[in-house]
Image 1 (cartoon, rainbow, N blue to C red):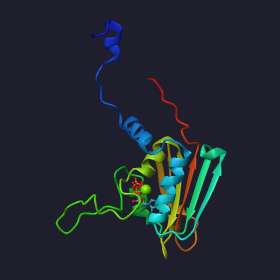
Image 2 (image 1 turned 120 degrees about the vertical axis):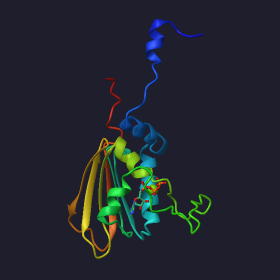
Image 3 (image 1 turned 90 degrees about the vertical axis):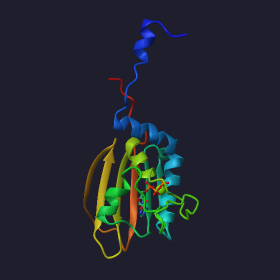
Image 4 (image 1 turned 30 degrees about the horizontal axis):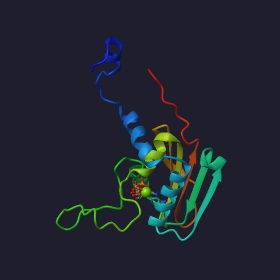
Length: 172
Ligand SMILES: Nc1ncnc2c1ncn2[C@@H]1O[C@H](COP(=O)(O)OP(=O)(O)OP(=O)(O)O)[C@@H](O)[C@H]1O
Ligand SMILES: [Mg+2]
C-alpha cells in the first residue's frame, strides 16, 4: 500500500506557515471576483450604507472599487478589520454565550477582508462621522498603515481590490 522511497519524501508531515494557512483559508471565501463584490457589498449593507458605488475593471480581476456611505471605521477598528476572526457583528450575551443562531447581519465570521488581503492588493480608506479619515493597505498579506487619508465626506468606506490572485504558489 505504501509508496516507494520517493513517495515517502513527498509525504513528510509538516506544519504550514501562517501566510500559507491564510491563503488556503482565503480560497473558501474568495473563489472568483464576484465573491469579492458580494463580500464588500454585504459589508457596506451591514454598515447601514444608503448608497453603494461599484467600479469593476477586467471582470474584477484587475480592479474592484466599492464606495459606501455607511458608518465607517475608526483607526483602531480599521486595524482590527483586517485581522482574521475579528468582527463587530458577533458579541457574547449577558450570560457570556456566543449565540450563532441570533445573527442579524450578513457577515459574522471576520474572514472576508483578511482573505481578500491575502490574495490581492487591498486598499481601505474609511472615516467615521466627525473623525479623521484613515487608510490601510495589504499586499500579499503584508500590511502598511493605518495612515491619515484625505477626507471621504461625512462618513463611509472605500475599498479597492487590485490584481486579484496575483500571487502564485511558490515552491521553495
Ligand atoms: N464597509 C464597511 N464599513 C464599516 N465597517 C466595515 C466595512 N467593512 C468591514 N467593516 C468592519 O470590518 C470587520 C471585518 O469585515 P469582514 O468582512 O472581514 O468580516 P465580517 O463582515 O465581520 O464577517 P464575514 O467574514 O462573515 O464577512 C466587520 O466586522 C466590520 O466591523
Ligand atoms: Mg463581511
